[in-house]
Image: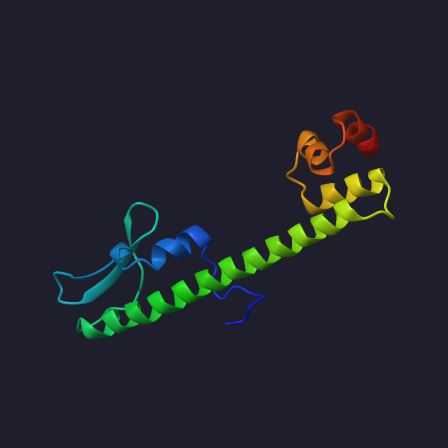
Length: 137
């Protein structure tokens, strides 16, 4: 699996549920075929459109995909940690910088953490909220 791209289109929450064996079941229908179901949205849905003539085939697919989903989820989480660590490293360097003005620091901090409120920006840089407000105008 490529470290930069997702292999599947599942969200992280869906991948977490898919990698749990208790969220899957393989049942035999009245017509004698086995079907594979998953439960990721609080209801059992058909996972595979294939009809299986014996239990071993969908079971082997299930175990194969459980491994792949867990691996992809782990890679996504590792990538998220790396990105967050890089951002935190930039924050530490930004806060220590003597060459940048306070206004520049505020602007860069808002780019690094767009979810921060003005109060959080002020707390990070240990300045007043008024200073942050003036710089953002």
